[in-house]
Length: 409
Image (cartoon, one colour):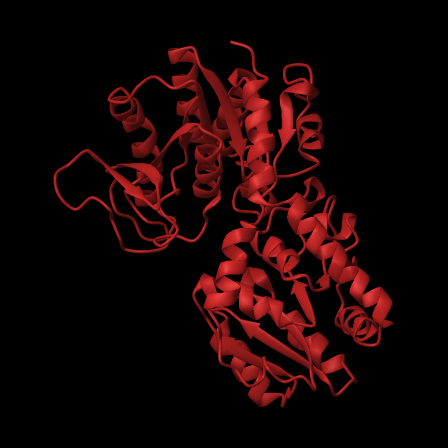
């Protein structure tokens, strides 16, 4: 089959680390299929543009994967220039896609919904299979985080577009297990039957994880300290991540062996570092930001990896945090300190869950794992490894391909 993957942000991982489409492409190609990824030329969260001349688009093959970049205007932040960039990619797609052989299937990703909608439109135009991949609930995310109200004109317009996508796609793939509950909450179940909705979460490329663990080591005295119990967090350090709660929990910990090692960067880091100094929090150490290639080694040296996040009403539909799957691949227990409708680590017995995330509750849960019987601890480790295999991109790609092939055209 000739398969197109349309995703605004899906540039090669060396430019931007979220590599879901790249992993799908690699495994689909290994299964004998032809794959092209269409992405915007702008690299998210950077000032890089992959087209710097007057070209409207260009092709590149990297690590065997075929990419097509569509020239889009630079932007910084989330203002009007980004809105223009998002719309620009969608309206330029048809003019670029006509230069390539007709596909047998198109998988188009939202966010943003505009390019997802255009991908479904192109699938209908070409008479091929059209799959909408929903990695982020828009505009529900805007409403959930109080960015705009449900009657805001932009939200109403995006809601109409969202429903159009679900109705017109041959299949809808969510990264959230309980996504059909969302369809029911919107009262759309008559137009969008349950059999049309599927679940393919994020995951981990186990071969790449093991390679990076072997080849990208971090020389860190705290990470190598066998006498301490290492609780590791990796990820962004911004206000929305609420790492202040972890500092509060660290202050409640009474076991002197426990050390919180925090890798990541963000605008909240200086303030949190100052808190550690001012409040003399001696069991928390900020390690700074590292390249993603080093994460497998870091999380594999943990005694407990912590999946920490600010509770959100969106979590009732499930979660798809990329780092959760790195934690699972590390084969170490996980502490999830938020309530969630479907957390793979909890469902498959790899995680301790704190549904009421107070500093006291988090501290007690960590100390429970610290003093856990060896057999129970090692069972959590084994469950994490087994769950990582379940959510390996090799298996996820097989699942995606199966639903593509089962669409009759």
